[in-house]
Image 1 (cartoon, rainbow, N blue to C red):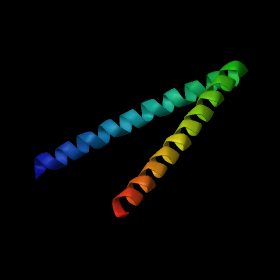
Image 2 (image 1 turned 90 degrees about the vertical axis):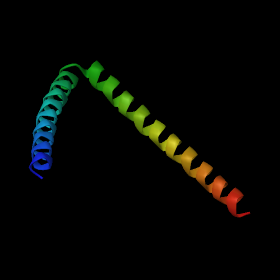
Image 3 (image 1 turned 180 degrees about the vertical axis):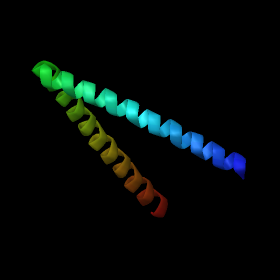
Length: 74
């Protein structure tokens, strides 16, 4: 039981340190984006593409699921 608790505590500490590191990286990227409008524009384009790709992938998975269910119950 003590081993499980110690593993959980060390995992929590590692996750907390990773969160702090990611916050630092995020703030640095935001600082650069605000300082250089070209970088800000590039980051916005990347985020738009990621969002678009997620929507397309979700639509394809949904359509394939519906077709598979129609095929299975037909």
